[in-house]
Image 1 (cartoon, rainbow, N blue to C red):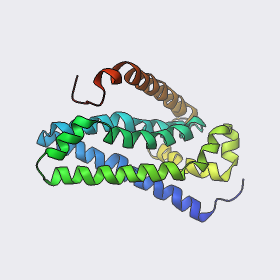
Image 2: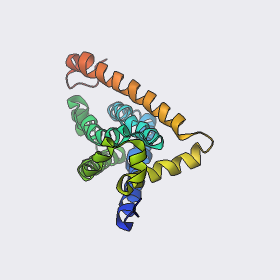
Image 3: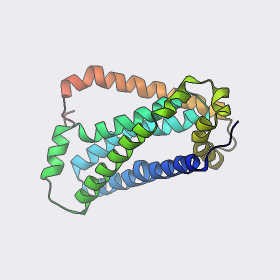
Length: 201
């Protein structure tokens, strides 16, 4: 296996650090904040976000198992997240018309920031999608693919050091199947009825 260029390794680790900040820490804080202040529209938007963004967590487990589909799921997550944050007309209107306060400012700032991060990341990772066409052993032998596995492998060492990678990969596949089934059900059976209204049951 060829050595990984220092600049590529730096980009990968920077990307994962930004992902933790923009897709985990900040949205978790916003959800808790909105719940405490009983800001229904923001709370609803954040719950929708977490359902969609769970694909990122699934991706981590797929990559721990060195499953090629993990490269596709991670890329799709970056597409679905901005859509989930901007698609709902009623939530957008309610948030726009709500009184200006620190929670609203924080939400708007984060929504723009995470959307830009996801779009740029999706564009930047287009070349990485070729890794999804390789077998697991080929991925491990390809420096430009293998480097994207380093952060998930470190995550495993911290939280699942006693669990074999293929077991975590299995849970990733299971999570992906459930995610796809739920997404398919929502798109084909619920989205048509709700159209772009998120507040309807």
